[in-house]
Amino acid sequence: MYQQNEIKISDSEWLIMQVIWNKSPLYMGEIVKALSHTPWAGATIHTMVVRLIAKKLIAIIRGGHAFQYYPVVPKEDAVKMYTKSFIDRVYKGNASELVIEISSDDYLTTEEKKALKKLL
Image (tube, rainbow, N blue to C red; front, side):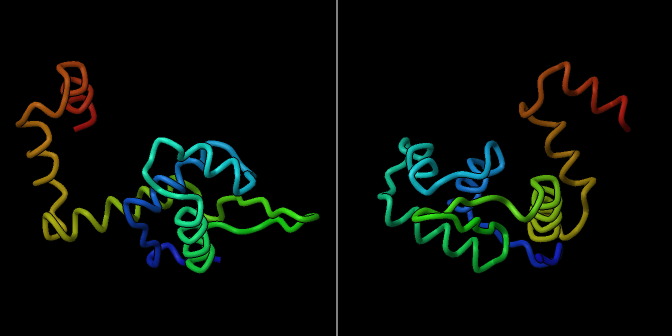
């Protein structure tokens, strides 16, 4: 099982995880097809899937001649850890600086800004 403080996912691995979180279990061919918009060859995708298995973020269902892949880590946990890591690295752990940055530029629509003000 994964440890929440150990979740480290590269940008490329995020794309693969998004596919697996959206629908699983999936065969490798289905993962490759879902990522056909990327420049990656099937072998590259397979290598990244193997890395995600080694990180214990996805697992295999063994059956017949083909394996199916499914997520071990819930998307919500990965997003939470990735966000915390980002805030720690970029804003030195100060989440309010992130909120100020997002709300002071053109990142949010008027409706989003109103919703953020309600939350605060």
